[in-house]
Image 1 (cartoon, one colour):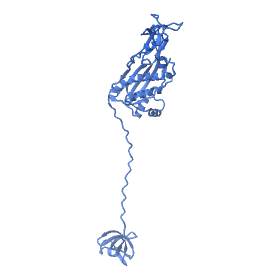
Image 2 (cartoon, rainbow, N blue to C red):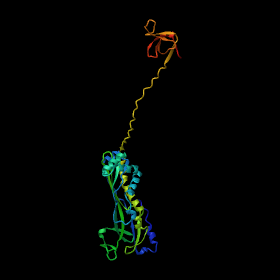
Image 3 (cartoon, helix red, strand yellow):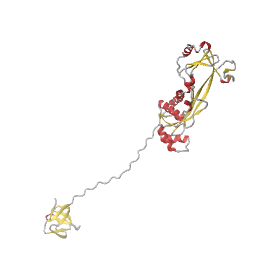
Image 4 (cartoon, one colour):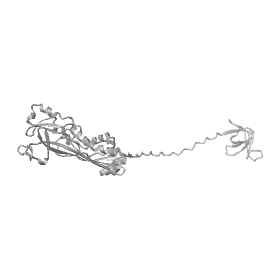
Length: 357
């Protein structure tokens, strides 16, 4: 964490009301952030887990002993939204809360967190499910002994309090000490593989409100270690929602950056494409045979013979009179096979009929 040069004690000392020559200057630096604890599995390195389903956090936020509405009123969605933003900023693809809500609703009641993670992960085609296990905000207190510009932390076990005036002092030296109250945010989470249900990663981290200060806190104290002036109002700063957000964002960043390195290094996970529904095959209708145009004819002679075959030597089946209508079925030389109106079929010589065009 980069700190700006601390020039503020000089500014404070320029104010006559503070009287620097009569008191001491307390300087509290943000300090280094502790490394998060996380345990990646060997499987995490094999595949690139980029598509993440972030489960809602419905449990209560553990907040005790903190008197700030801006901190105590925040619920699960507030913190999950910040985790989602951090995941997106690190190159993860986060499934939208709307899809998660619909998938969760379809599961009904009585489903465990693990079962919900697997079922919802598969339904949304995620690579892995990110589960927030706990969020805890706990009050902390530090004690400082100050000698002019020298600030020294005093272990709480070595601090006592005067019950008459409420003053805190160091047991060994009997020097007054300054009590500085703040808070710490702790986060525990894990990542689960959707296909196997195996835990890919377990992570936990902590961040204090002091570690997330953008600059050192500088205060002027009198000889009884009472506050006479400060470069910013410490209690108001850390009690605000803005500083809570900064502290939690710093914590999430510290926790997720190592996860990204492990989760993105493996080979891509093949996504199953939804199979298109087979189309119902409609049996093709055979093409309609074009009906041959019927060729009709009219008997042109007074009496014409209808024979059993094409030729005069074939048996005569019957006689037909002039103007009798017939249907010509086929032609063979000078003979036409015809069908009479009563269904009789036979052959007539072309000279006995006139074919209609």
